[in-house]
Image 1 (cartoon, one colour):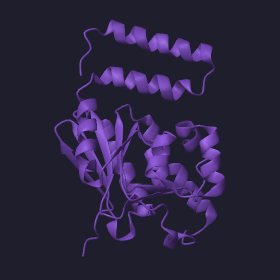
Image 2 (cartoon, helix red, strand yellow):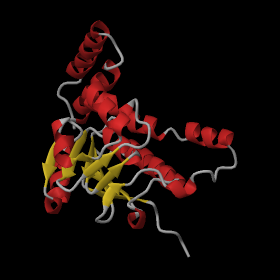
Image 3 (cartoon, one colour):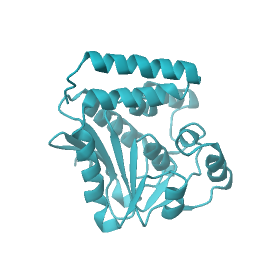
Image 4 (spheres, helix red, strand yellow):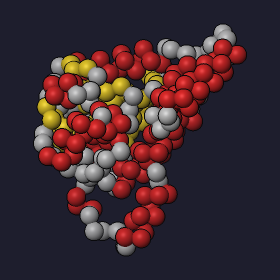
Length: 236
C-alpha cells in the first residue's frame, strides 16, 4: 500500500499550491515531509510557468503543529542527522526562490510551522490561528517581527493569538476561516500578475540588503534598478 504523500503540489494558471498533507497529526513536520517539501519547492522554483506560490496546510486543525516528536532519537547518530540537515537546507531553499510566496495560515501554527510562515513573503491568517514557538527560531523570527517581539515569544513560549500576530507583524492580514482559502488565492493571483523580474529584484534587495549596512544596501538597490531599466519593457 502506497503511503499518502506528505506534501501535495498542484498548479492553477501561474500559481502553484504546495499543501502540507499530514492532517491527522496537524501536519507535524517529519523527515519525509521535509524531503517532500524540498522537492516541491525545487519544482516550483524551476518551473518557468509558475509566477507565485501558495503554501497551505491540509485539514481543519491547523497549518503545522511543529516538529514530529515521535521521530526524536530515531536517527542512526547525531552526525548522520546533522549531515542530512546540511544536505537538505530547506530554509535556504525557501530563501533562494525569487517568486513570491504566500502562506495561508489557520488553526495551530507551532514551531516549524511558524518558521515556514516567516520564510513566506505574505502571510494571511484565519481568525482562529494561534502561534507558539517552543523550538528555536532565533534567526527567522527576528527578521520577520523584530528583536523585541521575538524575545517575548522565544523566551516566554506564550501562545500568540491571531490578533496579536497581526499587531506585531507576524501576519499581514486576518480573515474569517471560511474566507481564508479564497483570500490567500486572490493574493497569490495578484502577485502572479505582476512583472516577475521586478518581484525578484524586490525580494533580492530586501533579503540581501538586511545583511548589509545602509550604504551597501542602497548600492544593491541601485544596481538592481539599473538592471530592470535595461530590460524595459519589463515582461511578466
